[in-house]
Image 1 (cartoon, rainbow, N blue to C red):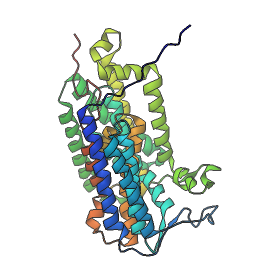
Image 2: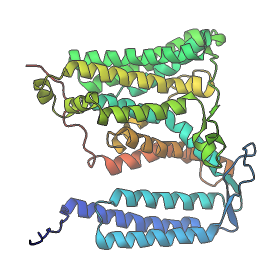
Image 3: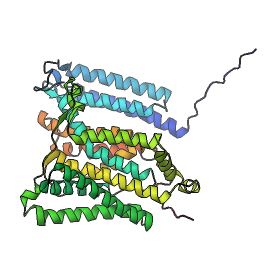
Image 4: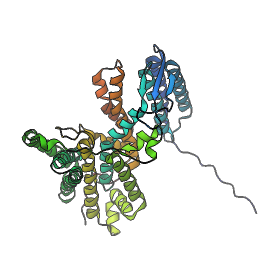
Length: 422
């Protein structure tokens, strides 16, 4: 009996992939030079990163103390080494992972430079990162729900804003739970309007979403001036309290970051887990993905294309309404005009960066949340960076991410295309 020889698997790489992989190497080398020039020279002392807070159970947990200049030099050497290897080998399959590691090293060098000779609460910044990621992650999840059935939802910003306004108004009149339910319902109503325009009347989906954004912005601004300003008691909603998960909340470092939050953070994790399971492990998810890729074939097999699109778009809007309530019931307890500040559009960018996957959207939202929380921490450290640039940090991160990903991520094949049943 003779052994059968197994032919080796040869990786086929297109010229465009090789070129992009080598561009990644060049970017890493540029980052290494930037670390040497900006962060390694002219700094003295140590950088102290606090891993616990004064009120934590294990408040005596040791801090992370690193030499500022030496750490930046080390990060520069590692970045240069990674860049050289990438240029020589042009690793295509792990290019995105390599970029992620490079960015993490660059950011750590930046934080080390910013905290040179000072003490910096790393656990506080990461906890704020998770909190600030909530509306972005839920906006991305809303977009995933819609675009997986080939309906583009540009109106996420308006749904977030409508949920925020409703949560504040109804929460002030009744209580936080009723306000949250009302916000979810309003998100569903706005998404139902989008569904009717896009599915029933086949209006251009981009235009329909923009109309919803303008409608909600104008309506909430008018009602704020006419109702909330004249009656301050209607703009004083209760804020959901922090819920500490027993035992887990006391874990040093990880406890405050992941297990000391209000219902919105836990709801975000639960929704992302549920939608991920539903999309990839259930019949509903299989049919939804089929409708997004090839609606005619799905219809031929007996799938109700229109019904599934209506269902997913409305559910996506309800998720956005829940995310909108975070701005009022989960954060400040009051509504201000246009308080969502473009988080719905950043959520769309997170959806693209996450390749139309709920977990990928969460990862991208955490990146944007980190950029958002970073501006506050750097202001406390009194870095020489102008405050205007700090305020631009989340949007700069959005532009960089989208510029590096758009054209390389493939949306559902039928995305944005109306379906006409024959």
